[in-house]
Image 1 (cartoon, rainbow, N blue to C red):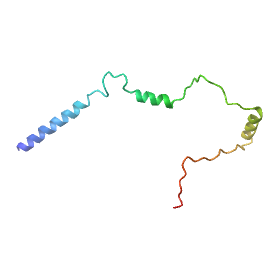
Image 2 (image 1 turned 90 degrees about the vertical axis):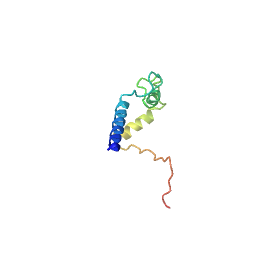
Image 3 (image 1 turned 120 degrees about the vertical axis):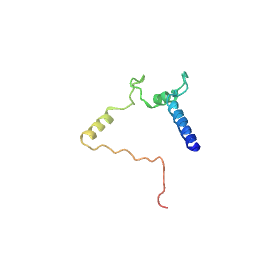
Image 4 (image 1 turned 45 degrees about the vertical axis):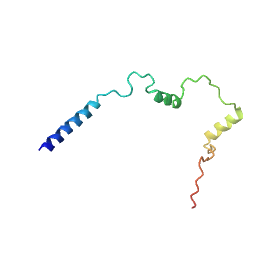
Length: 91
């Protein structure tokens, strides 16, 4: 009987500790650097909608006319297939 009461007390204490831990603050309180890694990663991956440099790559009318003609006749040149890793599966 005494062991059962001890077990119940332990369960109540552990449950109370678990419930109290849910009230704890997330992250270090007042640290301005908290979350800086997320902001840094977002800055790296989100494109700037208002870039400073709006110059287009050099081209001429002949190339542009050819591209438009191929687009209209549905004869667009397929992109060259490239591989970053060469895996030999013939083993």
